[in-house]
Every structure is written in structure tokens, then in C-alpha cells.
Length: 227
Image (cartoon, rainbow, N blue to C red; front, side, top):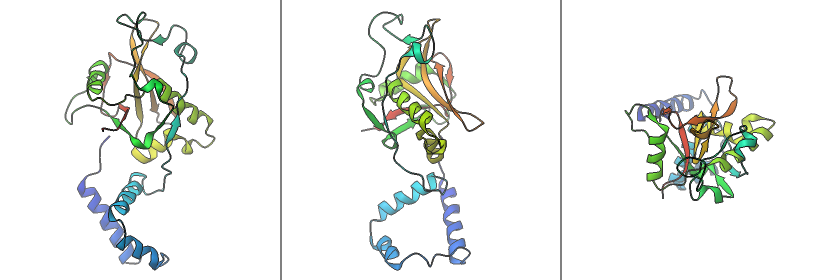
């Protein structure tokens, strides 16, 4: 995800200065006590809150992004023949998944990172290469149980703008999330990971990305923050 530049920040601050000091937008309804609390208070906290406001496109977006994990059955959810990848051939041995992700009861997505793991000028890399890079970071790679909790939240939200997926888009501009903590096996014997993608119609859909396919910078993976 492309980040805001210093020049863009300066332009935003200039807009605020022009609109407020030229009295194009009134500010005198703000209580003097509130202004004094900001001036004499925790400047770092105020700056963080201001950045959160910018990240929301100038809108106050609720920050409660905690989701409870939910069970996932590949054959039931995706279709017959889909399984969790096991061992070397995908059929026998231990399930290939992040060691910690299956044991999670809940995850606060406000306290996780969404990363591509691609260098700034790097061309797309295969999903297998990206998976290896993420595993080398030592972070928790969130898997299908986290994805199912997010999907249940989306499906149960009458107002989709209040769903966790849409809040991630509104606040961070995220349009694609991979869940690398679980490797899936297709009926044809290929390796996949579960994902969400926001379409041109503003609707979120689930899917499966082949690990043999290339991944671009907008393909972000949900992982724990760096300790």
C-alpha cells in the first residue's frame, strides 16, 4: 500500500490553515478548555489521533477491529476435494500452517500489520517465495480461522460499511488480504491460500490464491506486528 508523502502532509496542513485562519470554516465553537488541554497535554497522542483521522479520509472511523476466530472446513466452505495441505505431498503428515494461528481465540486487526513483503522496486514474486519470506520474519501469519471470523462479521453486518473488512478499506485503503497462516490443497493437488478481495462494485468476496502465481504489492498478508 502506497504511503502518504511529506509533501502531501504539508499540503493538507496548508489546507487546514487556509480554511480555518481565513474563517472559511468556523472553529470558535470548540471550547477553550479543550484547546488548552490539547496545547498543554500529550502532543504525541494528539498527533497520533490526527493521523488516524487522515487515514480515515477525514472521517471518524471506529477503531474496534477485534474479531473472534471461527472453525473452517475447506470441503464444506470451498467445495468437495479441498483440504488443508499435509506433509510433502499435501495428503499425509502434519498440516502446513502457522504454529500459533490455529490456537488464537480472537485477533485485534488494529494491532496487526498488512504487508506485501516485496521490496520497493521489486517485480511481482510467486506466492511460494513470499510465503518463505514471511515465515523468516518470525511473525504470526494469520490463517483461515481468522479469515472465517472476518467473513462471518461481513456476512452478518446489515450495513457493510460497519463491517471489519470495509473499515480496513476505509481506514487503510486495503483491497486484498491473503491469509498465509494456512496452506490449502485443491482437488487437483495444487497449493493455495485463502484471501479476500474488494471488487469494483465495492463488495468484498472470498477466494483462493495459488502459491505458484505472482503476487503484486497490493496483495497484502495479515500478520502480527513486529515485536
